[in-house]
Length: 396
Image 1 (tube, helix red, strand yellow):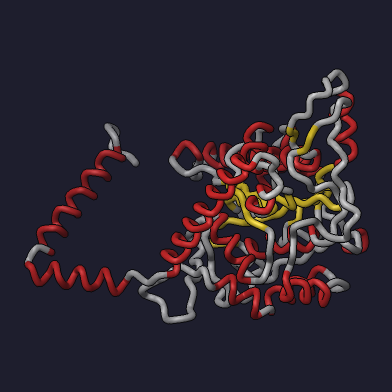
Image 2 (image 1 turned 90 degrees about the vertical axis):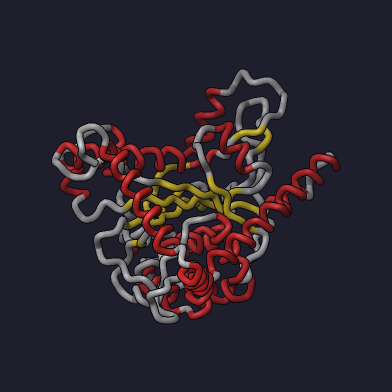
């Protein structure tokens, strides 16, 4: 997997796996406290509440397969609703970007994942928008008041490295903010600490995409002062995707007959971001179908557009500490600690170099004289799998 980017410094930033355990540890290495990433498998209300739990939601990180520069050509003759909605969302010019909204251009290939997460954190640390967890719903159907008068989101601590970076770049234009991220040794080193092991590359050298691999891109969705923005470092500016206030008013109108029983609801800003993400997914799936009809690879050929969505949320252990029931609290804490231990183990395996072990095993099999036979068996198994994939017609 390779990330798209601004075209510079690709050898300095490696590709890293899109995984909540990877990104959570990356932030912890940068000194961030009280935050974790949660993978979201579905966008319906029940699934969001189940996956987020009682944690505050600071932003969303959306990963999608990059379709290349021919998107505009494909969109020109596409008039479905999702495409039109996407086309109506244009980046803000630099003169209209709110002064307290952190937005940076991406100037380095492979940095979009880390940059998207940093965009969420920097906007959350000075954000007064409601970013609370799935909240108790009032009798009028609106969300209970959860806005904080604090200048930062409760539970989120950037730490000295990112706090200093945020202060230093506060008045920079988007282009210089992107350069500052690319030039930060602390951020780059933490990012590169999750590089994959490659037996055929020199130390401190990363795999450089050839252009034939699938390329992926990360964008962020954040609420800032009642407005939900899409932050894509490859765009000229942030994109306004919706107004939280209008969504809350609509919910109040629809929910006027609710009783006084408190239930958990999805925060209004997440509903706005959800619609934007669904529009984008529909758009790319439409493009994929159009590509297939013109003879290019399509979803039906076994490829298909790939998506991944994660939420940047409050550490679930911190959220669980406020649960009133001691038994439930202990169950959640034990589950979260076990998850952290599993993340730690998986990250250690990602960084471990297994090449010496593999070489030693091959040498031992050769010494025992069983290597040729095992190699032949493996070749036959692979041939059988390939034949099964071809099917009756003989085509893949």
